Length: 188
Image (cartoon, rainbow, N blue to C red; front, side, top):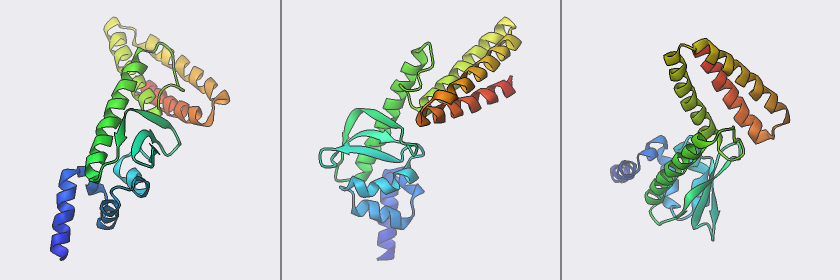
């Protein structure tokens, strides 16, 4: 019986590799409650680094958004239906999460100014890192690296000033950005 159970769990882990992050007891609980996403919510933070829970509607059968541990809500581009086989709908959640974040990153990169309210912290920080790489490359090419360092120091002061009047969630985003800017200054 134990061998059959281990083979079954290994088969499920092969179908959805994130199950390797779970112990056997947690995985059995998920598989036993596959149509009950409220039970599976407890285990999402073990499966996904950035998802603490999901927002459900229509008798817990449709997933419409992801939430972080800091209660940051990110609406999915497409709603996901909870299916009988948990590895299928969790796989679709993974793909939906990736598509949603890709779209948000594209939008954030097009913005001229900092839009903390509009985008999740992960997207804002990644966009900042991409802009840093582009600006750094341009500054090296044009021979104005020290000027860019001064610009970054000014950006650090501007971001620090914003933290005084920011909401709790925006303050969290700003702190992440500030740490990234400090790291960028150290790199320069």
